[in-house]
Length: 185
Image (tube, rainbow, N blue to C red; front, top):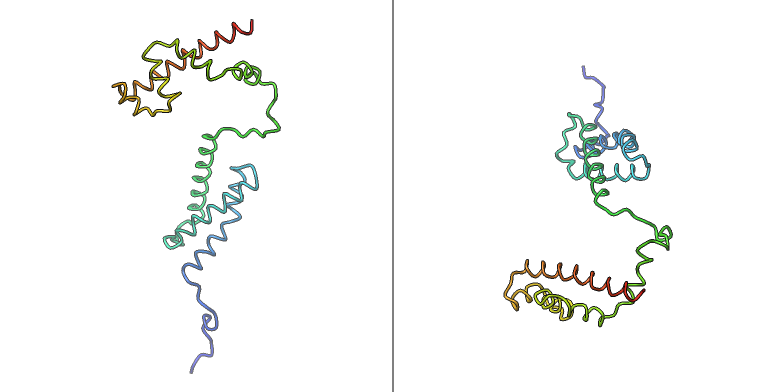
């Protein structure tokens, strides 16, 4: 006698391995959001972090073993992405909105003295530099030569060009500052 039972698969599509993996990933979203909110302390940043985790997980969906711990794997991805973002933010300069910049900073108060300088003032001060510094500075600042061109012309290394330019700038700053302070008195 035959059984009249119909197999459960009949009439239903069998999920592909990729589809099963997507379902497993989707099941992890609430936990990932909870962990991300704890790390980020900002729901928008947490949602962005979870989005990036899902994106990374979907890229490697073919290698995902559903029998292992997909939640632990995805939380590890989330944690690593969060650390990467923190490191990236630490390298960036803090953003100061334009409206929050004070108008009376010491740099702005000193600016008018330096703004009064002309190219002629700098050329006169450069003429007072020691010969080696003067030649190097004039070739670079006024003639627009590269370090390599200056090095070839003067028969020195590029490192020496850089050293001479640095020393010339320091010396010029002293000369110009002294000249400016004499003018203001």
